[in-house]
Length: 298
Picture (tube, rainbow, N blue to C red):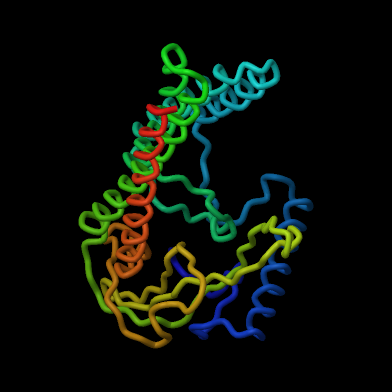
């Protein structure tokens, strides 16, 4: 995404690691930013969106989402849990088909996306396959209720969900590698000129924490580079905790999308993500096999 020095939604820093003092500055900055956005929304109404906001709603997906919500809630209210699972599974498959037909989506230029956590699902083939996999994970146990006992179906359902998660991870890896090869085709030298930082919160329900809301500081590097005789400043909308890479001022190689020069890829991020997804997938696959074996001996 293009880095705009006039856009102060996030906290800009040149510190690779966040100190205690800077942590307080980031928290104060994000609290102030959130209040300003809320104040602007109340004053200008729901249509008061920042310039550059291009988020569009897919009508078909919206209809399926409404059916999913109403159908699952209604089925649960009459204790028809198998029907609720079937409705949810069917809707997820439908959403998967819609996602497949929409194709790959470009990263949004909506500034609000910088503040959202997990607001964007995978698009294109990866997203569609993932949604269909989770839909099938719900439908398969429901179909097996005709020949298996309830406990066995539940165990099989857990196993199918684990398999769906493995499929999602594999689809994400394949999608990332394909984009790295076919989209970010220009490798150029870029310099890290700083980091964009924001807060990320998580709820802890442990006895020690007493349900406290923990706040973490996450960040992403900002790069400056020359492309087609023009100076660009861009960053990845992928944030991480801890010490950030690369170091401030370091010259590294990045991939650039020729069609959108502000759309970049820092390949070490992709490799690290793929390694993590591979390890998680192996663990999930082992537990899935254990579930299927367990269902046969219950």
